[in-house]
Each structure stands twice: as structure tokens, then as C-alpha cells.
Image (cartoon, rainbow, N blue to C red; front, side):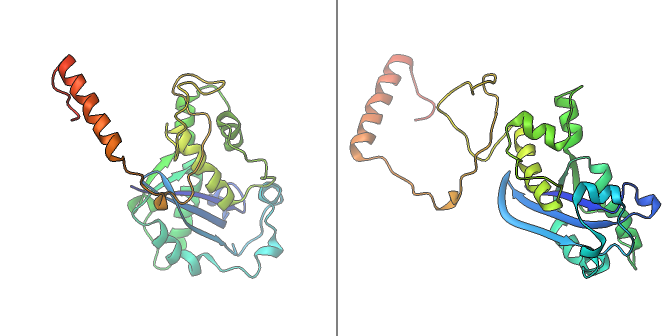
Length: 233
């Protein structure tokens, strides 16, 4: 299963008022593992970024003057996300802006939902934690994810953080600690933190020795004698 965790930054809050996308950040996951592949770009919105938006993401009008326009990056962006399930926090916001940008292309592109699935982690969080704050910062605090290096929002950084949040929110992680049935401060089986295994594909396989195999067979024989056929033998 290929998923793309996506976030955008914009000139304001409503594309119907002419606001545009100024940054897109995406990270790829395959079978719930981060692959290291990502897509990131800044975009010249061809309009002024509102001061309120700059206060959130820190991206200034001057910074964007030499960046490509959306029509110049649209094909590369579409190729990266095409056919994936998009994982987005408050999906209606980002999808609304992306579809607005697609509608302004000539020829216009169909809505992104025709090419991708969409999973909204905000809806997931509200269902799992009703009545609580469920913004990205609150979820990081709840799940013990370190986002202390983030002072302003940024699309790629937020996408990377959201990937960790999503894995924990959906009840899984990329590596497990099996030394305890109860994590400190949590319930039995509750995942409280995430640890990635770097270079997992190159881990060596240690095979059992002949002595260990013989001991295993002896133990299986005892089990069969005591309880009948062992299904895993």
C-alpha cells in the first residue's frame, strides 16, 4: 500500500477568495514504512501573501518572487501522488486548495480525489479523542512525538511529523519494543512512542545452530506427547 503524507502552506485560508498554494510537502510511505522519497516545492502564487498567513508559516512575498508557478510544478506533483492514498490533517483544507489550483490549469485537471484516495487524520483524531484538542501540536504532545525543533509551520516538516502521528494514531509503528506489555504511563498494548529502524533491509539473519534445532525438536516432541499434534510443527 502506497501512501503519501501531504501538507500545504497557502497565502490565506479560502481559495474562493483567490488564495493560492505557496508550498507543498509530501513524504512517501509503503506498507506503513517511510521510504525516504519525498516531494517538496515552493510556489510563486502570483498574488500577495496575507500577513496573518506569514505569521503562521514565515514564508514572505519576497522569498517567493523567484519560485516557479503552480503550472510549472503541477505535472511533477501529480506524478508523485498519482494512485496513492493521501494522508492529510484537515484534508478538506488542503484538498480544496489543490483542486482550486488544478481547476486553474489549462487544460484543467480533474479533482485530486479521482486519482487518489484521501484519509483525514483530523477526522480520525476527533473520533479517537472526542472533546480534546486534535491539532498537530496537541497530537504530538499526546503521543510523545518530539516537534520541539518546529517554531513555524512548514509543509515538508509538517508532513514528516504527521507521518509519525498517523502511524501512532492508527495503532501501528515502524518498530516495536517487546520488553514490556505495558508502556510507562500507558495502558497495556498502547503505543506511546515511535522508533524507526534505519537500514532495516540490511539486517543480517542469524540462523539457529544444529544444537538449537535439536533442542527445539525435542521440545516439540514433548508438547505433542502432552497435548497432541502441534499445529505449527
